[in-house]
Image (cartoon, rainbow, N blue to C red; front, top):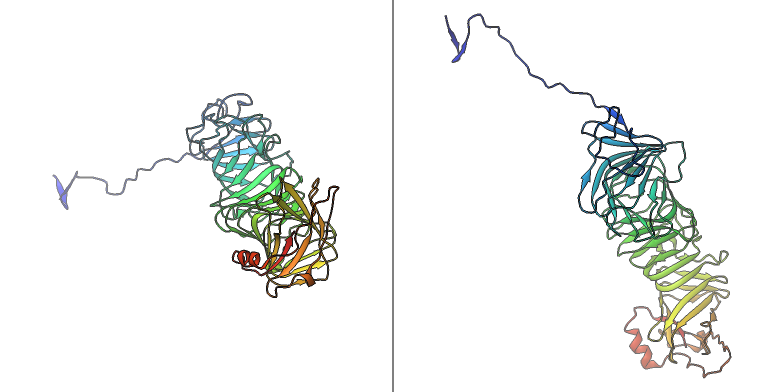
Length: 451
């Protein structure tokens, strides 16, 4: 007998119920590297576990102490590590061999090293994407991120990975070349500290909180740099220590809000470097304005550190009042057709005898040349001491002119120097037609002029 229920035939005596088909899930496994790639090979080969196998999805892989693992040596083909994660333990090393090609991997740095080791295309960057978790590991290594091969074109590391973890990172880009570790990721989850022993750590466009929340220490004055090179505005709350240098590139605004005690130079070649109310660059040995702007308005102005003989290379703008004293030096470069100019958007205070030091390339025709514009008043009762260009036989003097009143003689502080061969002194002050012509080019009305 056949029975139909809702049009579906069932055999008599059938067992009613539900039959479930399920796929068995194999637990993720962890494999340790057992074939060392110190001199050859790459991470796609059968080097994991015993017996050895290739990396595959769903598993984690460990590079143990004394072992080296290599990315594929290619300049054009993108590559992705096949496993879910790659753990570099203390004493283990990942060699990056893919300059010019993209690379993606989820890395856990547990005391190991990531090193650019040649390969790929000459001068091309070594791109590393994915994620990078940095574990706090008590075992010390010489460095965690860096390069060890050169003698030819340099290789930058573009760290496109998003950083996390609380372990510290030591950077050591190759000594022979000006290599850069460029940060592109979103690194708000990273809480470790940075130490730069060589080369440049540079924040690039598109990065978000690139340094995380830890401090940055630069160990050497001549070869360690922290560079801000982005088009998007940044806020840097990290404290900056050590003897290295800070570079401000590109068109954006970068406010510094950390406790900054670094002693290296501060170079501003573009955009605005703003000093926050709780920050300072008083310990920076040289403030080099190379076309950019230093905004000290949140501090109430810039007071140069005379006790440390802080100096300024003057070809840019200071927003806020500027105070200088004996021990401070202002450097101006002169060429035949133009010269450096310092624009102060505020008052100029001179205590004692700060120095104006000139350098000259070629011949400078006799005339009057503007060095400093200031929009407020001149205060303090001091005056500049003028140091003429080394080796020049020309005579130089200074003139202070207030275009609001047309007065110069009462405000003139004049210093002259003759290094052997006398030449006629340049005329002091501006002719009125010269003032009218030049004032069209400046919003401020007061100058310190070189004649």
